[in-house]
Image 1: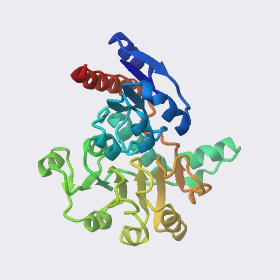
Image 2 (image 1 turned 60 degrees about the vertical axis):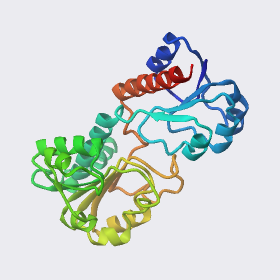
Image 3 (image 1 turned 45 degrees about the horizontal axis):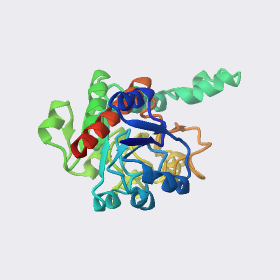
Image 4 (image 1 turned 90 degrees about the vertical axis):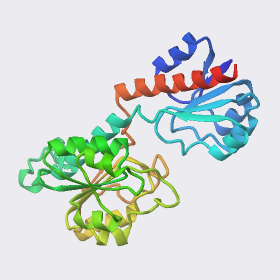
Length: 306
């Protein structure tokens, strides 16, 4: 059987597939048209987030039996088209969780203490010590929207800093939330009104797209910090900028965008916006785990049909 690696997968994952006896081709940077042209020869396709696996690609995959996504989300794969063809879609939901939680905490600290701005000031030859007075995290309330594995890991780290943890997730097990030191809020509005820092950890769906906009920001505390290391498009970036300029928002930490790379992002150039190029999963450890785990999932799926 043949596997096409069409995105940057860690070499450990490629080696795992080869050791399992599969014929593996690595072909990164294919255009959608080129991918449609080559996919008929393959039984499995492995991608990350850069490749959009469209209906056209799936329908062209005459032999395709499994699509593997090395990462948490599968929103870059047309799962409806895959289901119609009986093609399994697998991902690596646990590979990036620690890295994403740590990236969130890094952005939280950077926003609270003006780390990025002060660094830029120093590199510019200035000593603007008085301009970058920050905020302590201790005894502040962190509101986590979406309390899954990443949210729980973030809560554990925040507790170590002496923070109070509120959570909103209508699908979360209350016992799971409590076990991780958080208070489950009955309504989103309750979390927005009580949190000093708000962090998003939920998928982008029709229900969550644009869920943080001007109306929600108006309901928040003054000097709130907003973090998004989940999916681009959950926050209205123009509304975030307006909140910063009005003084309502202390700072924002953004790691994800819609589209990626961002086009005309209104937060670019705003000093109180700490912007990263989707680094949540970009650690050596997470990349190895994602590569190996997606390879394992592909091998498991193909073994069932061989």
